[in-house]
Length: 250
Image 1: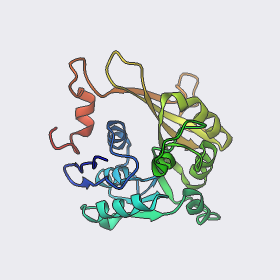
Image 2: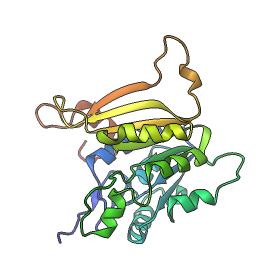
Image 3: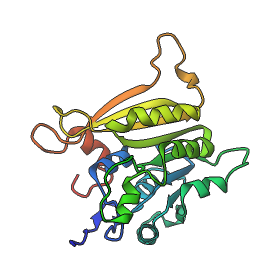
Image 4: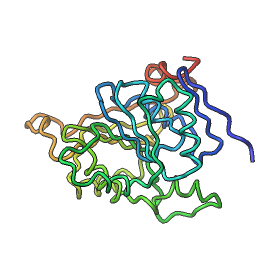
């Protein structure tokens, strides 16, 4: 098996050969657009390589907590964090997120004002031989219902949870979110090229009704669309703008 090469960013490096899920363009764009600058406590659910945790730490001055179930990914992501400038503010916890959330039950004030996750999303799909990769991609161990319940219990009153999903899973996730009084407040779609259909969606969710957009002429949520490549197969202006603080060659 070909060994995965490290992914070198401007301020940190992601070693990823021991992790089931590798660095992707979608995840990088997701980590770059999440508005974390004002967040004081950030939770990364299913932190994998530590990519989103470290991107969030770079873009904020708050504390970042990554929770990951796979022991090999935990070991490698902790090493990635240790070699970064953000070690003092970033921790990786080895746990399933349900147990992590249960440990915080009964707190009068939920602890996180920003939650980010690129969760397992395949349901009832054919699995491959790599069990760690199956766990990272299939939601057998973390259903959308379980994830929404966890988000609702850990998200602060004025906080926002950000979820990256394939476009095909958007409706199913929103249906589950409604059961836990999670309201859509932001929706961002990703396209590969300007002529492409969108393939990923970022959902921003708040607990309870979005009081800021209840006026008759107000939209129920804000919408935005971002493109990764332009018509000439070069990174788009949007992608360059958002990833410039991270990518070495931008």
